[in-house]
Length: 458
Image (tube, rainbow, N blue to C red; front, side, top):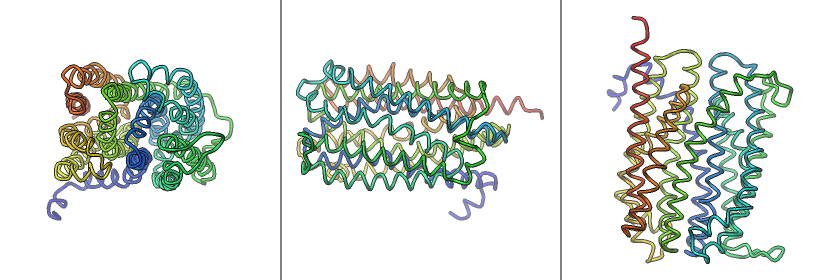
């Protein structure tokens, strides 16, 4: 192994080192974001399969605007990286201020949308008894979005500055608080103002409190950093119409891609809810496991985005090509390890989530089938974010729309409901979409590298 490492050229070794140094705290932080959902799923699932179904429906619907907004805010990370790479430090403060403004507008707007129409939307697809159970948890999840998004701006800003460990620490503290609240609220030990905080309601309340404290802590920390003083984050910033337009364009493209992907997966959850409680609970566990695993390549994509963005801002096309390949290899290697682990221990993983004998067969089959999409799914998220960091905005968005909107969602309906394959049908639809997206996103990045190499003078 040592001989193999020494054979790698020094610049490539340095690229791996830079990626891992920047990415591992982001990975841990991203895993921490999903850890809240993971602990919600485990603790509520052990409490009641029915309550897990209610929680899943409320979470699925709220994640559509929440993750879409996270994509819309991605311009904070990309443009901060660009300006730091280009030495335009006087433009960084405006990026942060715009991000906070966008976060508040999006959070309040989407909260109002869910409060006014969320339950009615669920009623169009899901059985009435499940809608009734998901109603109050959905209200709390909706209220958590405006307090969640400003904290995401803080995380993206710190990542662009290379202070990824700061976000990790904040995430770990928030998760510890969330677990403590889950253990208190989910069993039903608390009743306030006539509301019984049990099961899904307890989990939603824990999420709201933990998110709010995490966001407040991150923003206070950023404002107190000596490193951010030169940016004058609270001061009046110069108008930067061009920078603002580019920040929005990155956000529009990323938000559109996130929307179609998370919207399609929410639709798949609605299909499961249409079939029954066992199916929606089984799909929840499979999707939750896949989502936690997915946070590693997503964290790598954040590190890749920062490094590619700085290389692009500096006009270093050799570094662009190197960072892309290093990121793809890293994501592919990790997801290969996940495939092996999941194939060997699918039964153990299933029992970790639930001991319900009605759930376990569906969950185990779903986890085994998921092994077919782990690798392409990891590659597509890294490649898509790398493309956006080099200002190739349209292509990854179109590929996402085709893969997850035009292909996965209809296939999910046909396989799970029309063909009657249930949870297995939903997973096969994800396999098809991930293979298409992963192949085309990665090929697009490599093609741009080749075109840039041919355009460089000999």
